[in-house]
Image (cartoon, rainbow, N blue to C red; front, side, top):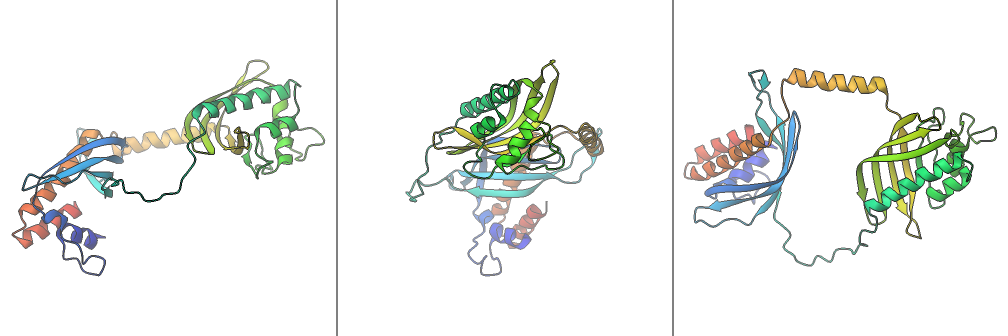
Length: 318
């Protein structure tokens, strides 16, 4: 809240939660230094992470603190057709580094899943799928070999399922890949029976943990006559007793051409309406400098309570 921020900057806050505030900005800081370690820059917002330290009037610096700052672009005026709205603080989190004391944290297994293991599991999934269509193995063998139905329910949303869109059971998954008159779901025609001659994956992101992993991106299926079909996927795996990955989550979808065009049009219209490019690193650094300089100035005005309070109020409001 406004009052809480004011209390932190100049002290004298009201309420039991603010009574210990001494006034961070009133410590007569001489200068400020920071180092940005990472940035996310968008048209109407930006994020920055890094380290900063303040230097006191005696020349001593505070220990380096770590920060995460989120900016949003405020309303501004157009300059040469570009909207130059100021950046306003929306999120500010600061902390000192861990002091190294033993906190007796829980012991976790080291990370046993690698990106290479994820990629090899994807390659195996695609290879076994083509072998089902070629008649080298059954859909039952395929499902039992790569999915985790024997361990737990699987969150499976096939790309081409329309009426029964979710298949949390082994029978539903086998039906989707096998199809035919005796399948569990009547709409299924047998996704693995097309047949496919090749399957490849293009991962946009892979997350790995001690006993699970996740990946999302595009998968490309090649039909027997060379036609290619691209779908979007999100897949999650768990490690089984043998150390192999088994699928516990799989969401497949084909891109909606109309939806893609609408999304592209919306993005173009939004940028045109804003008349602006993404926030730049220079802008982020500029507004961080403004923030720090205001903190230093409030400390210089320490002898004048009215000036200090006015400066803090201007900092919070702008």
